[in-house]
Amino acid sequence: MAKRRNFSDAFKAKVALETLHGDKTIQEIAAKYQVHPNQVSTWKRQAVEGMVDVFSRGGKSEGPTEAEVKELHAKIGRLTVENDFLAQGLKK
Image (cartoon, rainbow, N blue to C red):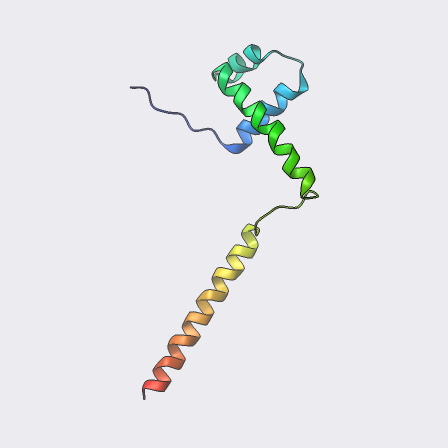
């Protein structure tokens, strides 16, 4: 059985954007990137459908950024240490 290939989001976006340009056919693009033409068509469709979300949000991302997540994890760690310290003080 053949191993399933995983493509990065950046690669998918690159291929989909090239199909949206319309300079080459889907078959030519599929041959260039060595993927199946059906896969290229799927990525193109997903890109077109996803554009609605980009414009409806006003270009803002939906979730927290990676920096925000790291900051929150650090804060959780600090609060956990404080709680453990205070809990030990109450036991004495």
